[in-house]
Image 1 (tube, rainbow, N blue to C red):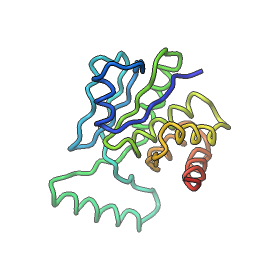
Image 2 (cartoon, one colour):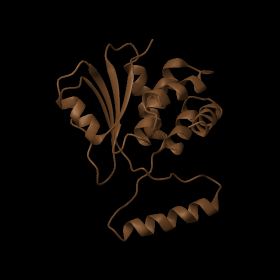
Image 3 (spheres, rainbow, N blue to C red):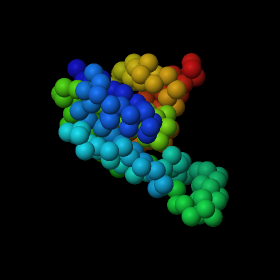
Image 4 (cartoon, rainbow, N blue to C red):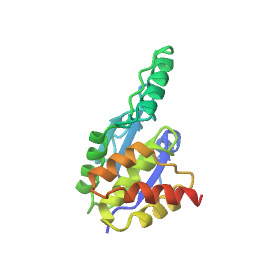
Length: 181
């Protein structure tokens, strides 16, 4: 067993946490970028707050991809931004947090700005940690049942796949699941 998961954007999550309701949020993964805010986690017993943008991470050995990223970084810098993509360390932190709350009573809320990419990837990593190898397709189906508009951040999922030693099965399951949407 594992806690139920909710994936929401900033406004939805803030309203959920401020309004009396029947949903017992006992843990939260709040992800925000440089110019975004995480929801207030004060009343939630277990919280993981991460800061990274909804930006692509470099793909080792792909010079064309690296050139595209440099162009995007220069464009962002013109507006005073330094885009910070997810790292393998972020994936590790999410997986470790998931393991620490595995037996928790209550709901895990995963939140980012829109509740579509970064928080969906975090939820997918949690589900994958809890269900174990061979259940990657089930995890994607559950995520899409919880958040039909989910489009998990591909790099965060790739890093999680590596941390969980899934040999690409989680990435493939995500790509296959999104093809059916």
